[in-house]
Image 1 (tube, rainbow, N blue to C red):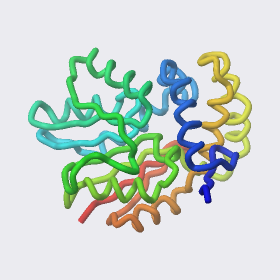
Image 2 (cartoon, rainbow, N blue to C red):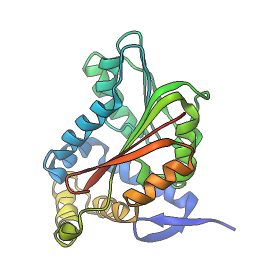
Image 3 (cartoon, rainbow, N blue to C red):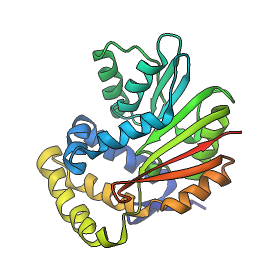
Image 4 (cartoon, one colour):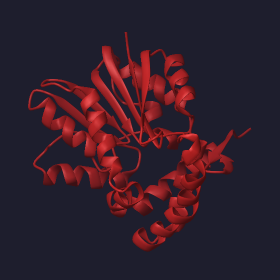
Amino acid sequence: MTNSTHFGYQTVAEEEKVHKVAEVFHSVAAKYDVMNDFMSAGLHRLWKTFTIAQAGVRPGFKVLDIAGGTGDLAKAFARQAGSSGEVWLTDINESMLRVGRDRLLNKGLITPTSLCDAEKLPFPDNYFDRVSVAFGLRNMTHKDVALAEMRRVLKPGGKLLVLEFSKVWEPLQKPYDVYSFSVLPWLGKRIAGDAESYRYLAESIRMHPDQETLKKMMQDAGLERVEYFNLTAGVAALHTGIKL
């Protein structure tokens, strides 16, 4: 029997979700950063800056950036880790990975890249000092499996950082819904020529676990000292956990 899962508000077969998510990001890859700036009024850059600061990457660190997209985190980590470090940019979507790789090269940063599934990471146990995933976890079919994989590849003492859209502060929910389901698809159509992909992105945010649920999922995956930071009234949240 085929297992089902959600794709936004739709219920689909697990195999179908993988292809549907791939289609979304193939469609939006070229305009991804431009749309992020419009969608968040540039706030996504502040959220990523906060995540980078919390990561505390030092020279010589080995860092894995999962669902790294256009390479914002990997770029910062590569500069911090320096020539003695090792920073991997990975993504399951070839179009997104190509954009990220090219942007790193344009900045003079030559780092390894890998097309890979976060649920089946091609790295050895206890390898990385830091693992990050920004705005990618909600698109994964088996989030518990992915979190366990992230913990597996972390060294003891290593830190996982999960930056993701989350549950917004209650008084802001109605205007946030209006923005998400009316303004966002309109922007997607005008800027990226794709309203449906941005409608899915709005739905996927609503289907993602809230702050406390994700915290428990990380604890269940074996991470310790799990905490989260609400950003912009909970529009996004950064969760961190340590492998002991």
